[in-house]
Length: 88
Image (cartoon, rainbow, N blue to C red; front, top):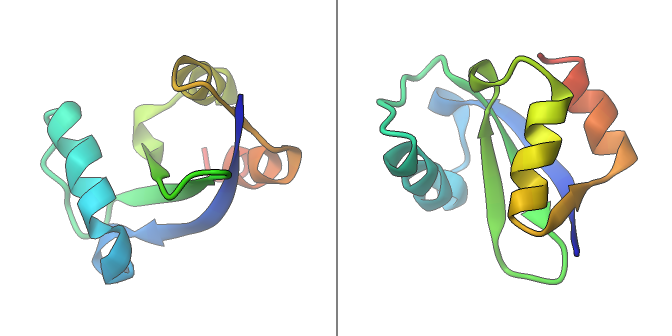
């Protein structure tokens, strides 16, 4: 199982360009039209070159995020869990 650590929480309009392909991929999967004021978390999946994107308004609890990551064979680290919890 991989560990997901927080790279940052951004408004889409302020997102560093290198994360954009990951955000667009997740938006396509979720059939979501991304807006500049959408708040999202970028998680680095350790041991890989990939990132996991969380559109924070799509979740009602940390448990939902943990389940999504579990389905992707990843576990969120404790510090990241606390920070994201403060943004839900």
